[in-house]
Image (cartoon, rainbow, N blue to C red; front, side):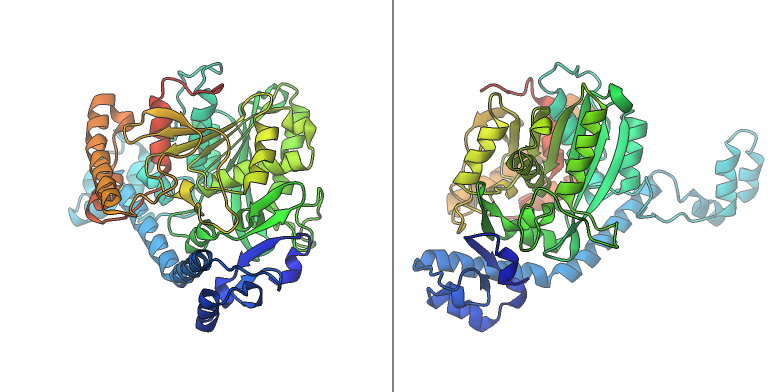
Length: 496
């Protein structure tokens, strides 16, 4: 990237950990002339005279450099952990019985049981074939899916129920972490709905695929009443995406305001142009598509083909950021036909995406004449507090905050409780975070006993709960808690 990539903006600041040297860090700390620093892309004349602000940028760059340095090991460890857990999951479901059969010399016995058992299963056992997890198969789960295996929808919720859209969206947001085959199988077989397409989208600024989403309808063809777009959040072991969540970089879009750079890049912003209404996809490479433009065109086609259909957009974590920016940019492009049929944007653990100007634009277009942006947060989830109140763009949230506490009680706020201070910034905050972790562990055991199997947590999640108590400051950002919160809510406020 170069400064020319932002020539469409008259105000921008992009941190560059990829080319930051120790000298650049020291220069940033002691000199207000950040426009002359290679660690920051901004106008050459830019100065920051406030030492606390420069210190915040210095610390953020250090953190980003550290996270980037861990990208390779984290990816390798993550792949190994997911593979091992899927293998264990297969063992627990009886897929290693053939090894036992050979060890115990049971092949003749199994052959004699062919008349009583499914012949295909017995043949597989006798053959002794070991079926290893296939990352592209419909049975392979991400860490999110291994932590919480629930994928079924609550069929008791009628379309008129205030929780209906939220329940569908939170489950779609969780399923979005899985591979295409898994998603397709869940939508068509478990939900009995119409799977449209899975999108793996190109980021022109990073030259990588950094946004994934899928689209489905509640019914096939013109009978559809809902079109749903679900964006994937940050995978557990993807250090590059976690770095993007930490990054406070921004640029100002005319008429829109200051937008979070990493999320707008992932959504499909263009070099030198920003957000033109139309773009050509990468010529000669049809697989390289931009998220906003490709999904917008698909949604428009589906809504035109289904006169009764309305649109839901959702995502967990950074997927929530992409979801709300997707709807906001459609309003920016005056896509009135689509915006008039927007039923809601449901985000879960969404980080901050812009400044006060962008917030006012979004509220004016998403929450008038009625509220359509529903932003859910949970207890101490750290991601909604990023990039933080001290960010150089003064990022903030907008709209009502539907907040679940540790006991999954739902309350409505304008901001996240405790957002202005880090939960571990003091001795009292440290103690409070440990107490909350212990409460979550106790709640896990109690909830499964009191509410039944649907709320019973598996061994992976229980282990993580124990680690959260034992390791100070260990945060968790899981879709699991939002699924529980929506399921236990008596109603979802929509008119406060």
